[in-house]
Length: 164
Length: 223
Ligand SMILES: Nc1ncnc2c1ncn2[C@@H]1O[C@H](COP(=O)(O)OP(=O)(O)OP(=O)(O)O)[C@@H](O)[C@H]1O
Ligand SMILES: [Mg+2]
Image (cartoon, rainbow over all chains, first blue to last red; front, side, top):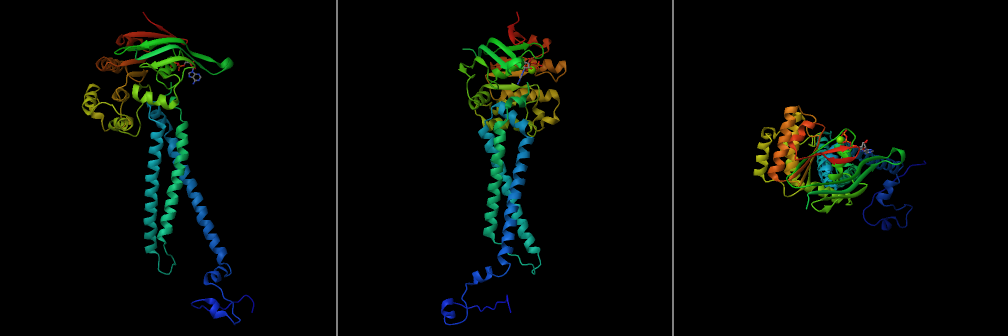
């Protein structure tokens, strides 16, 4: 029959076991990756994760931008008073960090709690290292978004805020 | 040395046939302990004068110095420092930050600047301006007059050498307006600072030491 494979799993060095036989020696990893559909499915999942990242970065950036735009007149006022761009930039970035950190932290906890309540038949496992890594990436992305808003703050004309 | 000195200052807006000459060959100086009124019709250039003096706008040509330091050709960064250290603004629209309580408005200044008033001085300022009970309120919960008094307190708090007030009494009834002027005058005399008040209201000039009239960008001292 076509498209059927039989495999025997062995321990130790494959070459020893397969020499002088009709069998072909393959690493387990390679075998799994060559299973029909496996790589494709994995790739889809990876793409979904990356796109989620892109989407959430855009949302976070827009959110931060709106927060800034709402406060333009207030930033203008502070600038008119002589508060430096640097100070405003630092505060915005620090506040974004706190916000993003709390967000990621809450998300982390909720994920773990959800995991606890899923029935044992659902195959989930949490890789804490990966989660932390992605959390850190999200925080970095949020801060990049804040840096973007900071440019808006730099461009605010203090004169407009006080209106002649 | 004068606190404020303007030499041959000009300001034009726009180009070509839309050009507006908002301030013409202005010479001006102000000394410590003086309160000065500037009156004049709408569009005559009063706000332009005040924003140039306050380092918010660069003159087209001429020179502005505060305490002997020329500010007309400084970068925005350096001018912002001059504003922080030397100038207190009292504006027609409130210069209070909406989501900070009255007390926190002052705390913010402590964060960005040294040499503000001591806690004792701040308390007596609260008393002078009768705003002690407003400490924990937000600007939106204050009346126009209360807001204006807090704004004056805020302008005074950083011990500026120059207080610039653009129509500080515009949103007030006349009793309150007289009170605010009285306050500005007393603070100017007590702290030996310099105050310039722009106003439409000619009744308020009695509180001032000198009065200038602005007309079509020309500033002239009234006898
Ligand atoms: N940013 C600007 N661009 C162009 N023209 C301006 C600008 N700012 C002010 N002007 C013009 O300069 C002139 C003086 O304006 P200014 O705001 O100083 O008047 P003002 O005396 O304060 O009037 P008001 O009493 O109505 O506040 C006006 O003719 C105004 O149209
Ligand atoms: Mg004006």
